[in-house]
Image 1 (cartoon, rainbow, N blue to C red):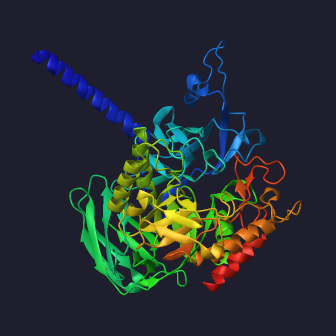
Image 2 (cartoon, rainbow, N blue to C red):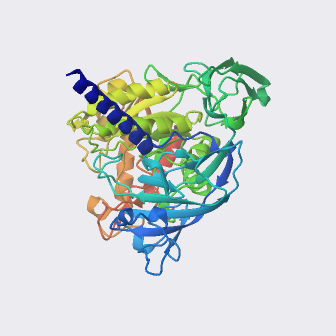
Image 3 (tube, helix red, strand yellow):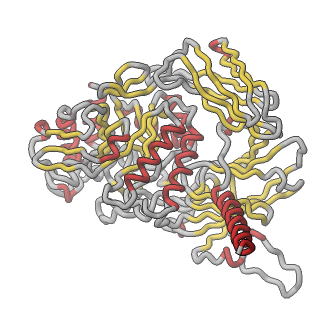
Length: 599
């Protein structure tokens, strides 16, 4: 009896260890932050690819890159002599035959390296959509799931002197238990969509840090620094030369050093996007970064920035270069989109519906635009699937980890248009909210809801997730998906949390720029006049909203979406943009411009 128990226990231990190793391989490693300050070797550029619509490459083991050894040998694949794709960049916009492709594309990149004994090496990806299997010299490093957050693998003992080969299997097939799930209203750009770098560090390096004002303070920084390596107990110094700050701390046996100091900071704001050069130096490493300091909170139904009420003049943006019809990733892409938001009069950009690339975050902060960053927990998520909460936790950590020192990021949005009737939805999202607050207490948290009731010209906002949010965020399309039920200026509101600020996170309607094919007062003709009237009425309604803290039209540019099927007016585009995909200003753009100028 006892012998059988021992055998069973050993089996359980083996199963647990195997599961742990498998999970560790699947999720990859937490990516280091601030790679701009690291010693990086860029792997951007031309990559050889194999397009694999049937998925047979897995059976053929293309990552081994086998070569014939005998006269009778042959292999039914080759990276050499085949297509080439640019990295970073989605594969859909680079080759016409891949325009609507959702499946597997294998990427291969060779690089030359000379081993240095005192260095550690990490292979860092800004993002790959959606699942990435990564191989180095025929050996599998691991898997990462999630199309919009960074990940890395340590390759210190896996790189060889001379030519090395990286193979990445990318797969953008929609997953029932994915984030997002099977259905979403934006283009599913696949491939290696952001930068790829090899990062060199010392044996012990500064892995991570948090340097921001603590909640409610305008002059006290409260944070930490984390070292990784063998020499974890070190003296550490933080310098901000412009403020003559030389703060000293020490890391413990786990490599963690507390940070707590005060100064008379010039606070970051949209009017004055002040950033300081911050230098962090340990005994074995040094990094620097431009960091701003500000305080964001809600009190008495208002949003306060640096203790002053602020109205959030926002616009929704997708991560797409409208002129190219391609995934946005570069600084030029970011400036194109953000300058259009600034011209509209915005002080905040909602980066929908997933974490955007780091260039968008940094450029927005530099330009004085507050940032709303969002998880792709979108509509029909399968919360009852036991793997989904695990994936949400992982993606939340990756999003916060990368951007926690970006003072421009003021809102973490944890879900968009999920439905209260979905099994396990409330429990999963309430738990996610608690974890978000534990990871980062200095930003606002919200869930975006569209399950409100609009009856008898009255909005009833009742979702339980509002009780766990700092902002009552609502997507409402009165005048488009829901007809007006009375005068917009007479709308009544019943809010489940009347003490909280209300943010209209989406509103609007579709219009094809220049459309004059039918009556201006009929939605079916997608006229600019019809969209313009929606915006005129919405602006009237805004005056009725209690504790209105901001508005955010959907959206800045028309963007690609496979679910938009009208052959005359949509042509594969969501036409709710204030600007066409060519940058033409629709009549509704001028309504919002005037409204924001007055605010």
